[in-house]
Structures are given as C-alpha cells and as structure tokens.
Length: 85
Length: 163
Length: 223
Image 1: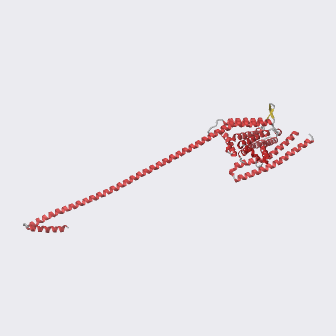
Image 2: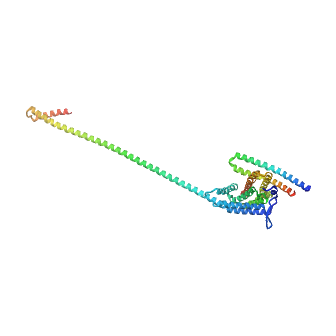
C-alpha cells in the first residue's frame, strides 16, 4: 500500500471518530434535556403522560437527526477505508 | 451503502403502494366496516335498552298511581261508611230517646186521668155514702133544703181533705 | 448474524431481471409483504360479534392505529389510517427482520428514501388538494425572500425521514454485527431485543408520527 493511501485511510478513520464525538455529544445532551423536561411535565401533569411521551419521543427523534447524519458521515468514511484497504 | 440504487428505489415505491392497496382492500376496510357495524349494533342495543327502561319506569309509575288512587278511594269509602253509621247511630239514639219521652208522657197522662177518674168516683161514692149515713142517723127524710145543705157541707169538707 | 463487512458493504444483488439488479432489500421486503398479506387474510377471516383471541389482536391493531391517527391528525383525517397503518406495519416488520438473522430492508438508504419520497408526495398532494393555489403561495410567506429556504426545508423532509430510519437501522445492524463478532453467545440475543425489537418499533412509530404531523401541518394549518 502506498503511503498516500495509508494517510487517506488514517485520516478517514480519524474523521469518522471526530464526527462521532460531535454527533454523539449534541443529540445526547439534547435528548437528555428533552427527557428531563418530559419527566418534569409528567410530574406536573401525570394525567397527560401519553401525550407528553409522544411529544418527547418526536422531539428526540428530530434532535437525533444530526447525530444520525454524523453516523452516516462516519460510516461513509469507514466505507472509503474499506474500499482502499 | 449510501448510494441510491434507482431500481431498488422505484421497486420500493411500487411495493409500498401495492401493499397499501392490498392491505386496505384485504384488512383495513373489512375490519373497519365490521367495527363500525358492531358499534352501530351496540349503539342500537343501548338505545333499545334505554327505551325499554323508560317504558318500564312509566308503567311502574302508572301502576303506583293506580294503587294510590285505589287506596284513596277505599279510604273514602270506609270513611263514608263510618260517617253514615255514625249518623244512623245518632238517629237511632235520638229516636229511642224521643220514644221513651213520649211513652213517659203518655204514662203520666194516663196516670193523671186515672187519678181524676178515681177521685171523681170516690167523690160520688163518699157523697152517696154520707147521704145514706146521714139518712140513717136521722132516720127520717130530710127536707130537700137540709139535704142540700148537708151535701154541700160534706162536699166542702171532702174538698178540703182532698187538697 | 451477518458480519461487520457484510453489513457495511450494503445490500447484495440476489438476481437480475432483464439486466436490472434485484437486491437483498427488495427480496426481503417482498418476504415482509407476503407475511403481512397472509397475516391480514388469516386474521381477518370470519369476524364475529363476540371476539375471540385472534379477533382481539385484529381489533387492537386497527383500533390502536385509528386512535393514533385521530389523536394526531384530528377526527376528520381518519381516512389516513390504512396508509399510516400500512407504512407502520411494513417498516416495523422490516426492522424486526434483523432478529431472524436476515438483513433489514430499512438498513438500505434506497429503501428508506423511497418511503420518505412517498411521504413527501403525500404531504404535497393532500395539501394541494385541501388548499389549492394558496398552498403554493404559502411558500412565499412571510417574505418572498424566504421562498428558497422554505423549498429547501420541504425538500429536506424526505431526506431527513429516510436518513433517520436508515441511520438508526444501520447503526443498530453495525452494533449488532460487532457484538456478535465479539461475543458469540447470549449477549447478542439480549442486545437484539433492544436494537431490533424495541428500536425497530420506536423508529417505525417515529416515522409514522412525523409523517402524520407533516401531512396535518401542510393540509390543515390555516396560515
């Protein structure tokens, strides 16, 4: 394997890892915040638990999108590495 | 992996539409129709039950009213009878009192009459007797004048005695 | 369980018809469709006034979906239930396929993007039908300068719907492949319950929830 290719593979893997750091932090914090607010809301209004649950899951799903994007980017980068090696 | 495969893409769209049509035709429509039918039936049954209950309530109310009316009437009848009996009793008692009074009256009148009669008889007897006694004692016939005098005297004496 | 390389490689071509490659995803989707249609026919047979166990399942599925649709989209959009139910059942069963060691069709971007595109056309078709010309004018609101941003936001919807489902499923498959590569017994079974069953149901639920919300907002919002 060329040195060039090795460098590309190394940086691609590094990029995948960095992408997952960012993509892991953001959604994790956002989803945790949503879950906390959801728990608060259930504590305030236990009778509306079903609606709060649905809204919370929906919001978390939207917040998760950025994390999924970074996962896809990371997988693409790993795919490049697989193609090279 | 992330490259878009047009064949898969188009087949999946067709798949989804076909499955939608099939499931709607085979599953959702018949089940929904059935559920709707059952909902209608339950609704009708509940309506019927409600109507029957109202009817029963109405009948019960009617019967209750009837019984109450009958009771009232019976009470009235009994009341009337009692009142009539009372009246009749008063009447009978009053009549009896009247009769008794009349009887007493009559008896008293009879007694008075008898008394008068007896007194009259006695008076006649005594005067006759006195005359006879005086005749005998004198053993002779008195003049009419004497007779009259003696008679009057005796009568007066008797009268004062009698009173 | 397929190995990590197989998962990352993407769907293999099983056979070709007239030179068109038919991939594993399509074949697995046909399998899911066949299962769903057979289940539908078997479950729907002779419905009775006094339900038995089988009929209870049918009623729970149909009434649950109807309740979800009416509570999310409003009672006047009850007729969307068959479409939403079909999407839900198809995606849920596709996601669960991983538990049988088969490749989930939804871990293929071509598949999830197809579902997203169908949703996209649904959104705009019903919005145009309900609002007409004013719906198109609505893209220029509140300023005409926002027109490109609004259009990009609309075009992003099928991508984000497809990406979300695909990313979650592929992530789950990758992690499952890694776990089964590392430990062969017991642990993959437990992990499979979370990644295939729970996550699969949750993702299909989120997909139909977002679909319903998008359609309702585009169709019924007055502004």
